[in-house]
Image 1 (cartoon, rainbow, N blue to C red):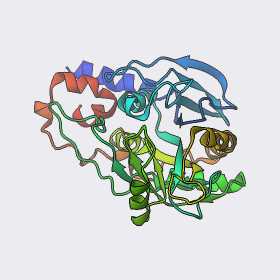
Image 2 (image 1 turned 90 degrees about the vertical axis):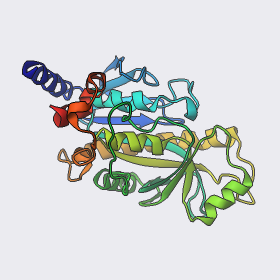
Image 3 (image 1 turned 135 degrees about the horizontal axis):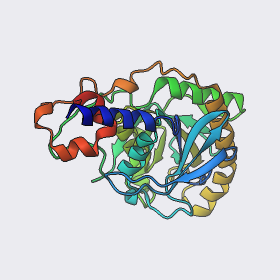
Length: 302
């Protein structure tokens, strides 16, 4: 048994060398310009297949794994995404930080299409998604009052400034189920709560990244004013796609700048999120669960 545990820890350490930073590209960002020495990696996870093959390479001298959230060609709706497989695949590759890029609608007059928001809070209005790795014999409750990594978020905001991209450094992202856009009543409700942007994906990623002890931060690319604005009262895909083209170019530049300037040391608590979160007695954790969650549980259940 001791040899098996030692081998599992050695295997986990070996996988850390594949990529240190993960980038998840949302609508309009299906590849990462500037990646060199690239290769595609198909990662098998206990939760099924990720949205697509991960593209691993070098960006600004650092090892990066890129994943198209909706698959190349945009094949998956938000509700169809295998969030657990996407985040666990990153963990298996050794990723310690995830930069998420996501298209959103603005709920504020002063957050205009083409501008970016670095999210610091989420409101979860999704329904029935798998948003935890736990259950089936093991229980954990991670702290989630500050759902994004402050160090990584600050780096992203600074990178926006360096790239001359208009950015707001803090704001709340309300995550709805979709795939339909909001009704006017819903948009007015969201605005009455003083939330900044609305999207369909990121809160689930943030929850899973926290459980996996991966730093997570979001660049919210504003594409439209949802449906509340009197001069933009009907959101269309054509309008969004036009803004996405501009946003994608800016996002590529910001991500490259952030990767270049990101400190190698994590000055945050993300890497120890599970330290006091696991409630279940280790002796009763099922063998299958131990095996399936080795990448995130090995240091706590060894």
